[in-house]
Amino acid sequence: GAVAVERLARVAAAAETLAQVAYLVGGAVRDLLLGEVSADLDVVVEGRAGEAGAAPTLARTIAEGDKTLRLECFEKYQTAALTWPDGFVLDLATARTEFYPRPGANPEVESASIRLDLYRRDFTINAMAVCLNGPRAWQLMDFFGGFVDLRECIVRVLHPNSFIEDPTRIFRAVRFALRLSFAIAPQTEAFIVRSVSGGLHDLYGGERLKTELGYLLAAPFWLEGLQMLDRLGALRCVHPDLRLTEALAAGMVWLAGAYRTFAPLRATLPQLRLDRLLLAVGPEAAESLPLDGQARVRQRKVRTAMPALVRQTDWSAAGLHQHLAALSPEECLLLASLSEDDASREAIAGYQRRRREPPLVGGADLKTLGLKPGPDFRRILDAATIAQLDGKFVDREGALAWLQNHLQQGNQAF
Ligand code: ATP
Ligand code: MG
Image (cartoon, rainbow, N blue to C red; front, side, top):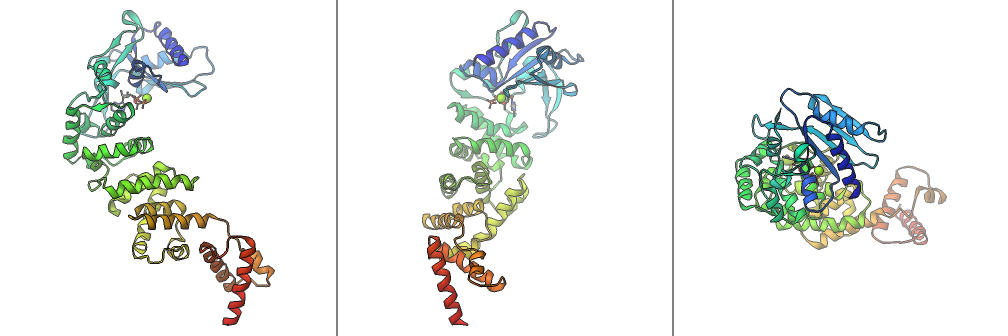
C-alpha cells in the first residue's frame, strides 16, 4: 500500500511541473475510496485540442533520472506506460472521448475534457478522478454520482446506450457486482436486458468477448456470474442458443472437482470451463467463436466421441478404452462432464486415472521372453494395456505372471 502511495506522490510531484492538469482515474480511485490498493494506476492528462504530447511528457518527467523504470511512449496515441521493476504499471493517457461509428465497432477517438473522458467509461464507480496538480490538487472529481453509488454498493452504467456501444460492459457489470458484492442498479439491468434482446450477438464474436468471458470463468464466483448472465439473457452474447441449464451447471461443477484430482493438465480449468460451456450449443457455434486452435481440436474430438458414449454398455475401463483411447486427459474430463449421471462420469474419470499409471509390461519383457518385434508383439502389448486397465494385475510380479499365462494360452490357441 505504502509503495503505491509513494509512487502516486511521485506522479503528483512530476505533474506540478506540467502546464496541464493531471488526474488519477478509473479503478485506482474506486479502490482508494474503498481503502484498497490497486494493482496498477491510470493517469489522464487534460490537453487542449491540437496540443501535443502531454501524457508522454509527464511520463518522461516521472522517469527522469530513474534507470530502473521502463518507459514506453506512444506519441501517435498520446499515451505512455511506466513499469517498475516489481511489475507495477502506470498508464498515462491524454483525456479523450470516444465515438462509436456503429454499435460494437471500434471507437474513434478525439481529445476532450476530463469530464468527457470520464463519461466514456463503464460505470459511475469507475468514472471518478482525483486531481493531482494545480489549485484543485487532491480534490475528488465526481460528475456522475460515483461516490454515492460506491457508498451504496451499486454498479450503475453512465448512459442508456452503454451496453449497445460496448457489450463487453455486460460482462464487466456482472464481474464488478460479484467481486465487490455490489448490486447492479435495476435500471442498469433493464438496459442490459434491452440491449441483449436487440440481437447483440451478431456484433459480438471477437477477442474482447473471449477476454471478458475468460476473466469471469477464472473468478471464484464463475457460477454466480454465469447464473446472473443467464438471468439477464446475456449468455446470448456468447451464442443465441446458450442457456445455463441445470445439467450444464452440474457438469461444470463436477469438472472443477475432477480437475483437481487430475492436475497438472495442459489446459487450465477456466479453459476447460469455456470448452464445456460451448459444448452445450451446436457444433457450428464452436466454429464461429474465437477459440484457439487447441480448444477447437478438444471440442471437435469430444463431440465426435459423444455418440459412442451414448451407446456405451460396458463401463469397465477396458470397455471404455475402445472408444476413449485416442482422447487426451482433458478431452476425457470434458466428455465425462457431458454425461448426465454420476456413475458414467465416475467410470470415465476412473478410466483416465488408471490410464495415467505407467504400463507394467513393456517391449523389453517380451524380448526377454524370446519374442521378436512384429504384429504379434503389438497385439500382446495392447492386450497387456487392457488387462492392466481392467485391474487383472497391479504390480510387476502380477504383470509378469499375467504375461506368461497370456502367452501360454495364446500358444494353445494356435
Ligand atoms: P481492475 O481492478 O479489475 O483492474 P479497473 O476498474 O481498473 O478494475 P480496468 O479493466 O483496468 O478496470 O480498466 C480501467 C478503467 O478503464 C476502468 O475503471 C474504466 O474506467 C475504464 N474501462 C475499462 N474497460 C472499459 C469499457 N469496456 N468501457 C468503458 N470503460 C472501460
Ligand atoms: Mg485496472
